[in-house]
Length: 376
Image 1 (spheres, helix red, strand yellow):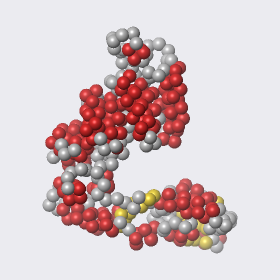
Image 2 (spheres, helix red, strand yellow; image 1 turned 60 degrees about the horizontal axis):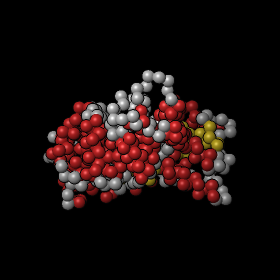
Image 3 (tube, one colour; image 1 turned 180 degrees about the vertical axis):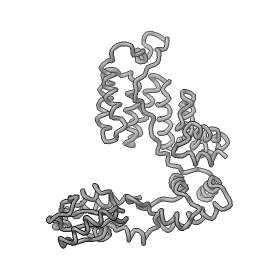
Image 4 (cartoon, one colour; image 1 turned 30 degrees about the vertical axis):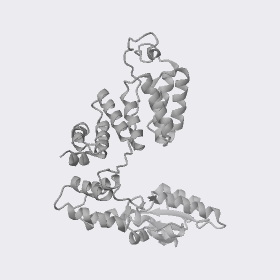
C-alpha cells in the first residue's frame, strides 16, 4: 500500500532533479480542509517544489488552493474574498496536485473505492469490520490519504460478499469461512503489529537467595541513592515513548549497561528499540539475555513471543505468551496475542478464555469487538 505523503515526497524529489520547479517563485496560501495532505505537509511540499507558503492572503500571494474537503464559511469569506479583490489565482486541491505531479483526489475516487463510499454502499458494514478484514489480510488498501483509505476493485467483491453474509451470519463465522476458502485451513494471516511491553519505572524486587553472585545484586531494593547506571536508564526511559528520540534513548540504555551489564530493564527496553526497527536478530538476542539474567520480567517473555510470531514460530510464541501470563496474568495484550496464536494453530477452544480475558482487562481496547466475536 502507498501513502499519499510518500507519493508527494517522490514527486517533489523528481521535480527538484529537473531543470524547472513547478512552484518556483509562487507564494501559496491554503484554505479549507485538504484531502490529500495535512496543512503542514502541504506547505512543506510547496517549499520542496520551489515556492513559499503563507497563512494569510497578501499582495505577495500568487496562488490560493481550496481544499477538496471544503472550506469553512468564515475562512472562505476572508481568504477567497481577499484573493478575488487582489486578483490572485485560485485553484482547487485537485489542480494543485496535478501541478505538484501528484495523483489528485478526484482521480483516486474514479480509480479506486474510498472507505466512506463503501460504507455508504453497504450500510450493514461498519468501519471496524473493514479494519478487521485488513488486519486478517483479507483486503488490502492501495492508498491512504489524510482523510480517506482506498481499496481496489478486487476487494470490492469480497466486501460485497461480507456485507451480504452479515445478514445471516456473525462476523466471526464469516472471517473463518473466508480464511478457510483462501488457504484450505484456518491459518489466520493476522499481522500482529504488537507494541512491545516497556519498562518505564525502575522498580526492583528482592534479590533471590541463590548465592552472592545472584544477578549481581541487580534486583536489590532501591533504598539508597541511585547509581549512575540507574540515572542513565531513567534518562533513556523518559525518551522511550517518542519514536523520533529512540536513538538517543538507546544511547542512554547502552551507557547504563556499560556500567551495569546486569540491569535487565535497560536490556529489555534496548531490545524494544531494535524490534521497532525490524532488527529482529538483535532484539531476540537481547530478550534472551534478559531472560537468562532474570526470568521474572514478563515483558521479556511477551516481547520475545512477538518475535517468534513474526517469524512464524507459533508454538514458541505461544509458550512465551503463556510464561508472560504466568508472571502477570493481568496483562491484556498477552491474552490477546496468545488467542491470536492459538487461532492460527487451530486451537480455537483454547483461545476462547483468552479472548474473554482480553475483554475483561481491556474493555475499551482497540480489539475488544473482535475479541467479543471470537469468544462466542
